[in-house]
Amino acid sequence: MNSDKENKLYYTIGEVAEMFDVNVSLIRYWENQFSILKPKKNKKGNRLFTSKDIDNLHLIYYLVKEKKLTLEGVKLKLKENQEDTVQNFEIVKRLKKIKSMLVEIRDSI
Image (tube, rainbow, N blue to C red; front, side, top):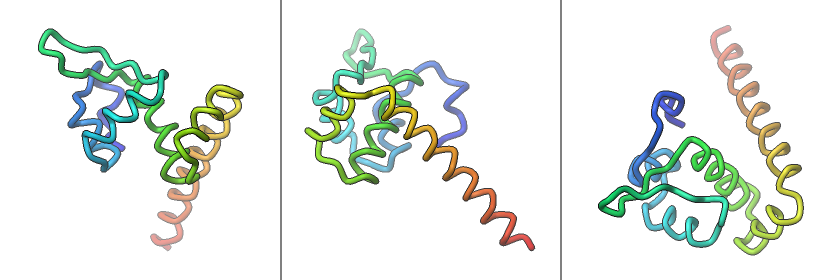
């Protein structure tokens, strides 16, 4: 993921699609499927995603692409226990970061 995330207020749909290495159409589709995605739109109608939107996309991406849940499964999971789902996702994210650091250390030895 792009390290500029904390420096920008808004991201275009193209930037977001690039962050996740997916098509713009998938981001638009997920926006229609998940109420937690609420990008702002400028006067031209272009979507502008906030950091919160990016975090929600990370969660959706994780559940769909990595956990292999169906869209209905993701909706149900977010509806039934969104807080637990977010906490578990954050733990997985931290563990992946730690693993990456350990692999880097191992490779430098």
